[in-house]
Amino acid sequence: MSPSTWTLEIESPAPAARLFKAVLDWHNLAPKLLPNIVASAVGVQGDGSIGSVRQINFTSAMPFGYVKERLDFVDFDKFECKQSLVEGGDLGKKIESASSQFKFEQTSNAGCVCKVVTTYKPLPGVENKDEVAKGKEAVTGIIKAAEAYLLANPGAYA
Image (tube, rainbow, N blue to C red):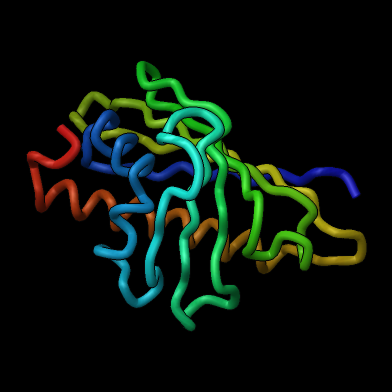
């Protein structure tokens, strides 16, 4: 099957630079902000630069135990990054591959717009229409949880 893509734009009152940094550091924030979903998370390879891999371990609230994500691209000046799923999640069960690109654009009201483009290749015979909605909901939840943390902690990721 050929790759499929979905896009999402999320407006936030948080500044682009801070929200970008929080998303890059999600493996440290997630267990604190979403303990009912994320049991633990850790960097398993690298120092946070391109090629680094992080593992996020989920509670029983999720249909799978963990995901490992590799950082494929990062531009600290443009607040942009791309990560790929390398293990866990639905990889090998429903999808052959998946990657997401995040771009945080500053808006005139001191907030930002987070633009997400996710590309995935479904396994033959697997219908993923419900999975797209779940993926968008999950990404929105991550951005909104990071946003709430930043608004409550003005010095974080400054």
